Amino acid sequence: MAFETPKIRYTGKIQEVTVGTGQKAVKVGGASCYPFYLFEGEMPNPPKVAFEVWDYKPEEWQEWAIEPYRDVIHDPVAWAKKCIDVYGAGMIALQLKSADPNGMDRPVDEVVRVVQDVANAIDVPLIVWGTANDDKDADMLRKIVEVCEGKNVAVGPVSEKNYKQIGAMAIGYGQVVMASTPIDVNLAKQLNILLGNLGVANEKILMDPTTGGLGYGLEYSYSVIERDRMAALTQEDAKLQYPVVCNLAHEVWKTREARLKREDDERLGDEKKRSILMESITAMSLAFAGADILIMRHPESAKLVKEMIGELMK
Image (tube, rainbow, N blue to C red; front, side, top):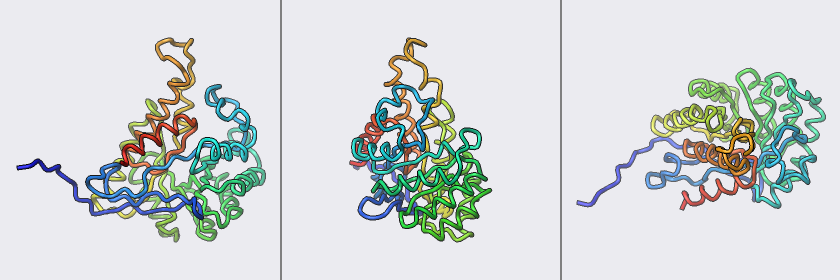
């Protein structure tokens, strides 16, 4: 008797969400099986990589992270266009770091103009990531969804404290929201319920379960995303059946191991190769857990991850 691979019967399906418009719009979600378990179901939209762009020139980045963007890093528009034209980015994730009240605390109107300039200059889907300060984001992201009307951008992080203000504006202007919760399945489900009760459509919600880097909380993020996906597919939990976005670049590149040079510790080897591998391993681990959008920094990391996803999808 021939051996038959045991298969799980999935009764749920991940909601399909579209970010962007036109021919270059990106669809995520839609899976009816665990990540890459193509022998058990369908995964019509493999995980996507979004290239990270900051809204100002970062001063604290490592030299080997700045290197690919040195000629454009002072200009978010040129930076985003280089990611697309040179490195083949299919999505841009604009990080609004300058608006952070604990940092530069740049005025909202100035930041909104930067977002508008980037949105108007690119033809691929845009993710706009705020400061994670609830009050600042409530004001800033509401204005951003307005100036980006018609572009179907994804905005966040949206929390339990500001979901009403941001969610209501996102409904009015047809944008996607990223529901952000601190590594907890029940909190993620609760926020999704609140957004649904507010009137946000299922096809306009992405989940941000909060992401840790390799060696700095990745295992917690992995477990929560995995549990989200299991509940969505095998327990038919409709309020967890949303695609997952992981803002991993900053979490990886701020770690000690991504900052140390070879001369600081010979055992760690080449700093550039080490950092790229740390980012790639983090991204692939999250993809295996169930992440649908991976926000990444270094083009070599992004290239490696896209190639690995392509191999797994064959």
